[in-house]
Structure formats: C-alpha cells, structure tokens
Length: 350
Ligand code: B12
Image (tube, helix red, strand yellow):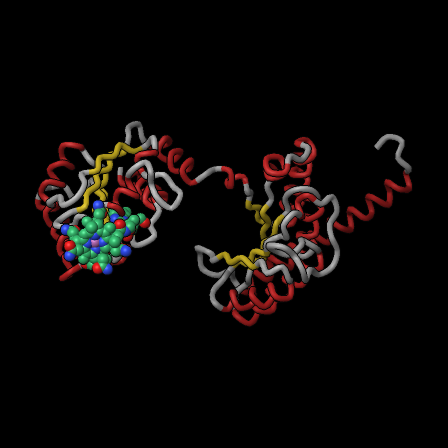
C-alpha cells in the first residue's frame, strides 16, 4: 500500500470494517435461526433449481422444501465464471441457471426463510462462487446469509484456463470470507475425480490384493447379455465393466450355471463376491433360484465372507435382501453402480 493516498486507505478500512461487521451480524442471525428451527434430519436432501428465472426458481424452491428438501442449490448461469464483474439485479433470463447476483441471493434467502418458518425447519441456501469474481461472490453470499457455496479454485484453472496465481489468491480470500461468515464450502475439486478413480482409491487404501468377483447367469437362464454388460470390459451405458478395474479379478462362468457349480467355483476362485443374473421370471423361478443359492451357501459354510449380489430387469435391492442376498440391481444398472457397491461392501466386510 506504499504511496497510497491516506484518505483513500482510511475510507477503504472504514468500508471493509463495516462489511465485516455486516458479515458477523448475519452469522449471528443464522445461528439463532438454526437453533430456533433446527436443520432437518441428516442426511440432508439437496435439490437444485436452475430455471434461468429467479422468480421461477423461488417457486420451485418453495415446492421442493415442502416436499422435503433441506438445501436449495441455485445454479449459476452458464459462463458467469468468465465474467470479470458481478452482474446486478434479479435474473429473469439465464442459461442453465441464474446469475449469482446480490438481488438473486436476497430474493431466494427471503423465500427460504419464509418457507422455513412455515415448515418449522431452516432451509439452507447454496450457490456457486468459482471462476472470476470468486471473492466478490463469496462476499455477497456472506452478506445475504447463504449457508453453503460451491467454491473451487481449480475450476477456473482447469476448465477456463484462467491465470493460476490470480485464481489461487482469489480462492484464499473467498475461503477466509466464507470461514468468517460460517458458510460451508463445498469444493468442486472432487468433480475431477471420476467415480472409477474413487473406487480404485478406496480399494488401494484398504486392500493389498485384488477383489475376486465370480459371475454367472444361473439355473436355466440363458440371458447373459446383462451380466456380461456389467462384468466385461466393453461394459454398457458408456461405462466399462468390472474387468476394466485394476482392483477386480473377474471370472464370468456364463449361462445356465447350477448353484452347486457356482459355489464350487467360488471356493476354488476364493471369491469375495458372487454376482448372479436372473432374467427369466416365469413361475417366480428367479426368486426360488436365488433363495436356494443362499440356502446352499449357508449349508456349505460359504455365506459369511462373500458378498452376494443379484441382478436382472425384475430384481431390486429390496427383493434381493428379502431373498438373503446383500444387494440387488435392476434395469438400467451401470457398471459403476456395481463397482462402487462392491468395493465398499468388501472393504467394510474385511
Ligand atoms: C436377448 C434375449 C434373448 C436371447 C438371450 C441371448 C443371451 N446370450 O443373453 C435368447 C434368444 C437366447 C433368449 C431366449 C429366451 N428368452 Co429372451 N429375451 C431377450 C431380450 C430380447 C433381451 C434381453 C437383453 O439382452 N437385455 C439387455 C440387457 C443389457 O438388459 P438386462 O438383462 O436387463 O441387464 C441389465 C440389468 O437388468 C442389470 N443386470 C442384469 N443381470 C445382472 C446381474 C448382476 C449381478 C447385476 C449387478 C446387474 C444385472 O444390469 C444390466 C445392465 O443395465 C428380452 C426382451 C427384452 N427386450 O428385454 C427377452 C426376454 C428376457 N426373454 C424371454 C423369454 C421368455 C425367453 C425364452 C424363454 C424364449 C423361449 N420361449 O425360448 C428363452 C429362454 C432361454 C433361457 N433358457 O433362458 C422373456 C422373459 C420373460 C420373463 N420375465 O420371464 C423376455 C422378457 C421377452 C418377453 N417379453 O417375453 N432371449
């Protein structure tokens, strides 16, 4: 600040202090509000509104809160992270969301306070503060009593190729402001970590050996397309199957495998998980076949220590549990759904 006009510095300090007092006062308002109304039961339900019109977002947010939402996330209009200024006023025509403006924050805060009173629990408000103007937006959020912000330093650098030094300095300022305001920061850095990375990372942290997966389409059932899609490298729904993961050793026994053969193979393969597909449901054969597998596994001492997963278009998690399996997956299952479950289940059961 060398050489700065002392009168300017003095005015700057005065304004900054008034701003900090305002943030501290808003924090007290939030604390009192949350203490009085409570914040809902965890896990909190997070609902996104992104109509492009803040007045429409407000209507949607109220409805969402009445339907059980605990957090309303207002998505920012496309491209705001490239603006080097903060737009003013209420947005009525955004693209993929509304601009993060102080008026929009204020309107939504007022609506959520009101619906919170009606429901007897406080409804949290979340918005974005990444890209250019990150500290300015964090400051507005603090002024208008937002509860949460998506506030990631890497977004600007990786996606927008914005000056790295500036982005990281901005991040530091906006984090300090958020801390002062008691704003929860959700960093978006985890956006860059794919689910597959997270699955491998969880495995690497907890296990020294690969997880053995044994798959089959059992009984008389010859419909192997579903289990193949989940297990084989080629996968489905644009995702690779379990064979593509470093953490899995996969053996697919194919079609019409008897429960006996499957369990025998499980012993030899030292399977951690058994994946069974049942597509045909005539005379409820899928149910009787799956229940018989678990009975046999118990009789052979192969139930404990192995995770049993079944899948097929007419199966669900609830049905699987009812039949004695650990998990069930229905139509539209993706390989990642299964990989994510398997790693967590096997790690937890070690
Ligand atoms: C292809 C097909 C066949 C092929 C199978 C070839 C093969 N190698 O798989 C052939 C021609 C052999 C065949 C034969 C028969 N079929 Co057929 N077949 C189909 C068809 C057209 C598509 C099934 C399919 O591949 N779907 C695509 C896969 C990707 O979907 P999916 O299986 O649902 O899998 C997904 C999820 O369910 C889940 N999933 C599935 N399994 C698993 C397992 C695990 C562990 C996990 C986690 C997830 C998971 O993940 C997958 C990916 O999202 C369906 C009709 C239809 N449109 O669905 C009939 C259908 C399944 N067949 C049917 C019938 C009746 C038969 C026959 C009895 C016909 C006959 N009279 O001969 C025979 C039975 C043969 C036998 N012994 O099983 C009926 C079944 C009715 C029922 N509910 O009982 C259907 C629904 C047709 C119909 N509308 O009548 N069939």
